[in-house]
Length: 436
Ligand code: NAD
Image 1 (tube, rainbow, N blue to C red):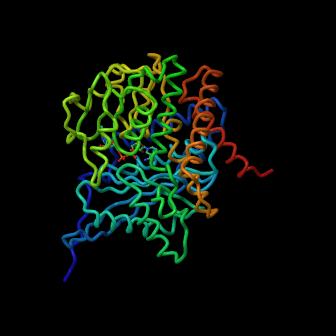
Image 2 (cartoon, helix red, strand yellow):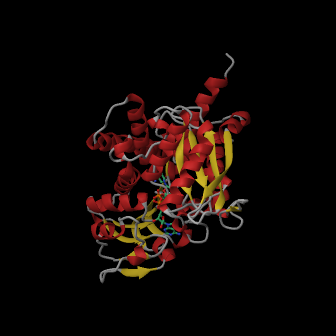
Image 3 (cartoon, rainbow, N blue to C red):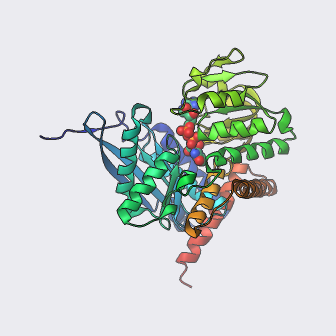
């Protein structure tokens, strides 16, 4: 009997989403601005700006009802000049090639800024995990690992979790890859469960780093973090861990949101109770959280509440030219990748809002991924204490480097971060390509 293959994904999902294209154009503009200041030649600029390799794959996946659906997957390796490609894999119905291109480039600049021996890469699969069973998710992850197998590896390109992907999927990914190559290679992927070569503290690392950067940014604005009112958009791996840590450090988290709802309490939300309510398997959404001491507000209103620090930790393109003038935060810490468009960035910078850019603020995840990668290559074990100590030291040093550069040159923290990162990559490219 003939098998019907249906193409999955939302209509038009193979074309660019507006937010994905804007993210790509904005990040290229930041690189161009840095290249101008550094007086980088146009040929060198082209070399560091364009993706090195872009892979599109079709993933045939058997669904629970027996149908075979064809999903589209991408992996973009933007640069491998400083080391193997590094970057997460995202499962999302609106994922597209421009978005993955932009996110891969951000990884190049993030890894260079943190001085990690990595290039930048990113993956995306066009699917909606909320509509898929665990078995279907396992099959699509395995199909993706199989399709990418010729292009990845511990010294080639190392994926990790991102939006809608987690440590279970990294376990399936590693397993499928190793079956295919016939030997162990734990460092082909990071963000694995600790029992399967993962590292303690990887799950909390991006959020912990975001919290540390928030504290540093507040202190630089002479705001005591213990008196600070913080708003967080997105309550997934990054947002919820940033909330946990900032609450632990004494800040008042006055509002949070996820894809379903916004919760508000001007006196501070009970973060441990909310975490307990939503962190279960399957995870619950914030709209299911019932309590007398929270007011429900719209997801849009969360972004424009008056606060000391706003942490966008959901998706790209959330703070735009349309709502930038309504933002009432003194500090913005970009937990998400590309949450602020360049148009909004300009408006906010002119208004004196201090912004910790994504390539700095959310780098904690890739720093700990690096520790996990080393652990897999060296066959040793790190403790949670070691991980936290090293992570905090790396993040603090990166924030201070960027802050110093921005003060010295009288430029924004984003410009300073790009300047440091672009200079490192450009220097490595020049050394590789120089004929003398
Ligand atoms: P996740 O899937 O765990 O969580 C995403 C969260 O955003 C969920 O709570 C979801 O409900 C919420 N969300 C989605 N659309 C929303 C909307 N319109 N309004 C409010 N909330 C919305 O993903 P994550 O890993 O936490 O990633 C979040 C962001 O951080 C992404 O931009 C990702 O690229 C970036 N990031 C993640 C890591 C990591 O280690 N996971 C590292 C660096 C950067």
